Length: 262
Ligand code: PGA
Image (tube, rainbow, N blue to C red; front, side):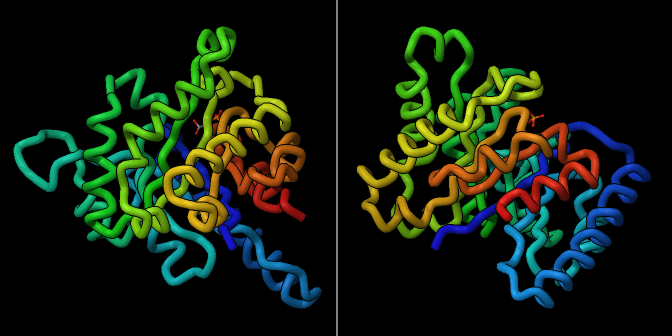
């Protein structure tokens, strides 16, 4: 069975004090709620993955040390193992501090930092080699959707960036569909649009790797997903959770999203 996941991408937000408040509130909510669920025999919450800025990784890892159901990851990594790359952080460094995940291919990296498919494929390679689980992002821009090219764009991004992997590597990969026009805009894909694209993506995985691999692939939705719309998005058969930006910065909102599969 594929996993349900709610991931919080903090981007370049929060100072250390704010980050500490956020995670301590979140932890209290998770503690209380998990105990309640066990008492009521309800299914466990989805996996939670937090993506703080690099500088807070070890702090946040300490807060959730050995805490079941919560993992910590980095928002990016460099595509080389080590070397003279001032200001950069490698996958092996991220792994060495105990983080388990990394986001690759976020549209903000593609757009603002010119990261193209080949580079992203290298980053995926480095990450998996260093035992990090990859959340690989794809998604079309508004003109691409308006001109009906959205399926082709997503297919290209996935084939070039990700789907050269061997089948057994896929178990360490999660796909996030994030239409660029929905990220940080307050405009969310409709549940129908999300389900349509997620089913298409699962079909691409099935065509290349077979039905079992496709059935096991968690596909997250991202783009103005919030405490109000998460439940409707998550009821779709092929939407296995969310990659949450803005709404992951408030513990109450994020926790409500975490509970949105109930
Ligand atoms: P948003 O960001 O939820 O603020 O739209 C999502 C993302 O970029 O991952």
